[in-house]
Length: 484
Image 1 (tube, rainbow, N blue to C red):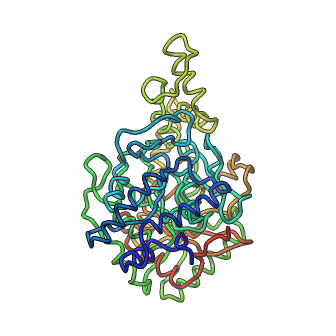
Image 2: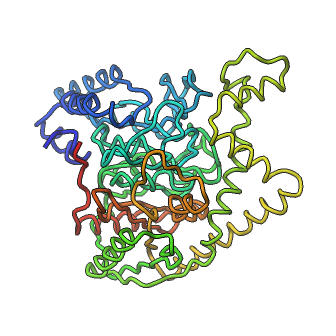
């Protein structure tokens, strides 16, 4: 098997035994990028020189029997809305086409400290707004399983890179499903951690109360390893939780015997495609065979989640993106006569249509009587959604649900109507509103395209979530790679 197809833990073992060198791992991955990137389009920026320098340093460390970090020699990609000092960071927007940060996000610093090898910045929907990675200013990323299909979004570049062997892992960001949905479409593991578990310092803020950084990996063990590294308190992030560190790798081997899994009734609705439903029902049977207790559970306010999500997220978007005013973080323009025209023209020229639409909608939700009639009501209903999960987790350890209603859809087909948006985001936004951890893992294939299963857990109980995902993964064979 080619090195680029192996998992992080498999590569680590070979490096530790000195069967391979870090530069060999990098060269295998870069050759893969050369072979498929033109077709896939997972990256906005590649940092090959930086990667070679790091791999050579790691080689010397290994040769001299010096300590190397937990990710020594492992090539990675980073979503292009996460700050990387000295590396172009565009959020896939014309607005930031020349922006190079002067500091790095905490998560990036932690990965570099563990000797990960930086390959580049992954493509995404502009400012994380979209479900297909088609709103990027630079390119449209394709699904490695079928290049006529979308990879999902907004972290589609990250998921495609991992699925295609163009990176061993990637970091994405999840506001309403932007890690889990592309994870499902691309047949990889995508985790949205509990809000506050992973520092958001250095993540370009879109919706502060929802945004969360998380890993996209080839399997659950790799996911646990990356979470070990990026989690933990950060004094630079006021939303960062202060609880002590947890070793998520240690929790993986416990199995699910006696575990209570709630099957989310409202998620198995009329929008769910039959092949996806069948794969999930089979997964439930597998959990039963493994000794888990699977029962239906009701989350009655889920039906309001999409409306609540869009009102709250768009409101926060309108506030956060107001800083891109043509003055500090600017798209340079010359056709203005005064400050009002500068701000208006900068946004008009620098932002894409999807971003402008959400800014306008968010401004509307916060304007005049709409604030009370819509925004305040959305905030109140969000508390009911949180309470639904809290009540369910009083009885169940895990909640099982679909990630999306369908497999990956056709490039260019769009997801603009409420019904289409529900099929792509309707099953993921509630967990984001509640702040709970949720993971997408492969659970089947239909007509050559992956199907994802969503597992949701109690706040800060990623250990049980990952243990459950690992038990399923170890009893099935859905972690294949696309034939590119």
